[in-house]
Length: 314
Image (cartoon, rainbow, N blue to C red; front, side):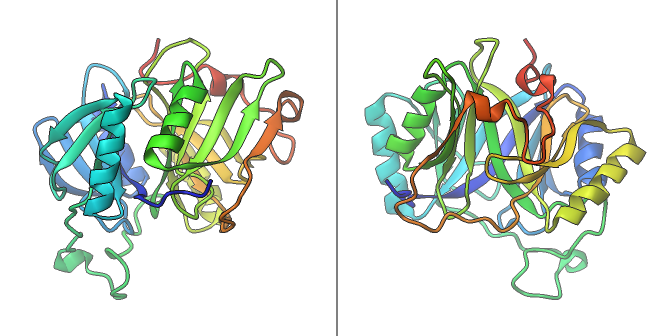
């Protein structure tokens, strides 16, 4: 089953933080995102090559976690069809006025309780003079500040039960599972899905606490592997906690570095090494429990906190 291509891409996320000033510093001064407005307890931020109004909505809250993930559809008719499918599946919440730069938005939940939204109408970013790029096919000028991540890449959700939510993404939203982990018991412990020709856009991994609706990490893409090596030095100098990496995943072959932002949310810097899934008849790659016990691609063992840390904390 190839991707349906009615979801165009993962567009933005809303992250909650109990440390709003420190988190804002992290995303602007360390990660290199640009502020593009504020509303109440929320600040809108964007990476330099995402084309829409914002990539990240950072909201002050009593705890950490992800409030909502935004998916843009490939057109108005695609939006209408996906809304109908979501409602028929029984997971719809309803229509909302979109955040700045976004038109009518339909909110829903996956079977594990994560909140998502889909929309079509979108205002393309119009850079002010000081951020106007020299190349007209780029959203804004390169900020040359901190890590300078290029774009939002993917979101990894924690789920009490992976199969139900990933089947929902496949059957209702039209995503395609490219890789998965199957334990000796037969349980699916992780599944990676794509809406596009990228190797993955959404990931669900098993929450060992049995909790629902939590976040494992949000990932931002860099241009090169070397950007991630440089980022490790920047994080070290800025006092940002490095959890694991730099290294290369076996699954999806992504070069990675994981850190915790000051609010407690795990953030990944990733470089997918130009790996694309172009085959329309791609068969899901299944990794066994024994294969995963070998660790990452070059032998680094998966750090214990990777299976225990999620937000909000429990």
